[in-house]
Length: 315
Length: 282
Image 1: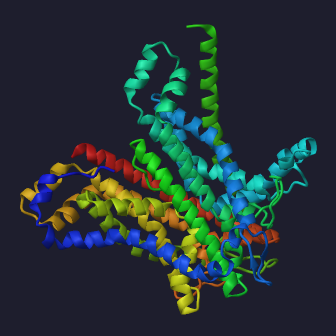
Image 2: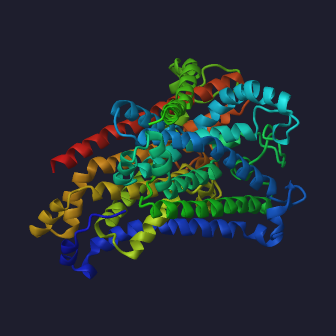
Image 3: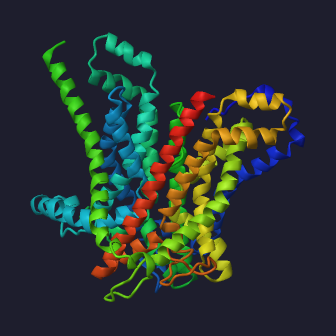
C-alpha cells in the first residue's frame, strides 16, 4: 500500500527525538508480536504431543484419548476435502460475479449486487451454521444427496447412505461463506487491468465476451489466483459453520455424502473436555497444523496479490 | 461479425448475469429464514429480559447473552481500537521502512488466521494460568482479532487525507504529533470509524474464540471476571440441542445478532460515504 508520502515534511522531523513516532510505532508492532507469540505459544503447548507422537501424528488414523493414540489424518483429510469442494463450487460463481461487478455502467444494479455480496461477508459464521443445520442440510439431503445417491451410488464419491450433516453440506456452506472474498478481490483485480488492453481488443473487433475471456481474465490471472488462494485459507480455518454441518465423525470415506470431521471442528468440540494433558496437547497440535497451513496459504495469496499490483485489504 | 460469435457473446453475458443473481440467493435465504424462524422467539418481551431456562419451561430469554456480547465486545474495542488506530496512523505517516512492511504483512496474515487458533492462544495465556474462564480472556482474544483490521483500515483512511493538510500544519510550526492527532485524524475520522465499526461487527459475530475463553454462562453477570454468555454462544449451543424450544431460542438469538451486525455494517457504509464527500471538499 503506497502511503501518503511527504518526504519534505519527513525530513523536517528530527527522527530520533520524535517520541510520537516511537510510541505509535510500538502500537503497530503489537500485530507482528501477536502473530509470533501465537505460533510460539501453540508450539509450546503442543510440544508434549509433538515429542511423544512425532511424524506418526500426521499419518495416524486413530484418535483415542483413552488409550492415548492420536492420529490426525482423518481431520486433515476432511479439512482439505471440504475446502476443495467449497472452492470447486465457489470459484466459477465468484469469478462470474466479479466479472459482472467489474463492468462499467448500470451503476445501480451493480451497486446493489455489490452491497449484497458484502453483506454475505458480514453474516456471522454461526448464523450460516444454524441455517445450514436446519434448512440447507435437510433440503440438500432430500433433493440432492438422496436422488444422486440412488442413481449414481455406484460412484464412490456419491455412495450412501447419505446424511444431512456430511462433507457435502459443509463444503456447500463453506462455498457460500468464501464467495464474497473471491468475488470482491477478483473484482478489484479485474478492474485494475489497464484500460488500453481492453480497448485494443475491442478495436480489433472482439466481442465483449472475447475481450473478457481472452484479455481481461488472462491479464488478471495472478490476482485471481491470489483471491482463490486467500479464499482457500478462509475455508480451511472456518470453524463453527463446519462443526455444525460436517457430521463430526472420525473417518476417511471417499463418499461426500457421509459425515467427516475437520481439524477446527475437533478442536472446538473436544478442547474444553480434554481428558488429560496429552489429549489437550494433541488438540493444540491440530491447531498448530491448522495455523501453519493457513498462514502459508495466506502468504502465498498475499504474494500473488502483490504481484498483480493489488494491496491486500483487510476482511 | 459472424452470427456464431454474436450468439456466444449473448450466451456468455446471460450466464454472467445469472451468476451474479445466483450469488444473492444464499443471502436472501439466510435472511429470510432467520427472520421467519427467529420472529416467534423475539416477539415476546421476556426474550430480552429473562435469562435462559431449562428446556420445556417457557419464558426463557437471552438477556445474559446480550449483555455478555456487549461487555466483551466493548472491552475488546477499548483495548484494540486505540492501539489499532494509533498504529495505523504510524503506518500511514511514517511507514515507508522495512519494519513497517513487516507490520503490514503480519496484520494481513493475522486477519486470515483461523479464529479457533486465536481461541487456543487466548486459553493458554489468559485462562490456564488463572485456572478459570472469564469475560476478560474472551475480550483479549477478540481484541487480537480486531487489531489487524483496525491497523489496515486506519492506514488507508489516513492515506486518503491530502498531503496539503499535513504540510500546512507543519508549516505553521506544529509538532508532528499535533499534526497527526489534531489535523489528520479528524480529517480521516469517517474512514477510521468505518474500520472500527467493521472490526466491532466482526468481533460481535465470532464464536470460536469464545469457546475456550469465556465458555458461556446460564445466568446474567455483568462482571467480566466471571464466565459470560454471548449471542453467538447461545446460537451455537442451543442449535445443537434436540429441544424445539431451545432451537427456537437459537433462531431468536441469531435474528438479534444478525440485526445488530447488519446495522453496524450498513452504518459503517453510511459513515464512509461522508469520508468520500469530505475528501472531495479538501
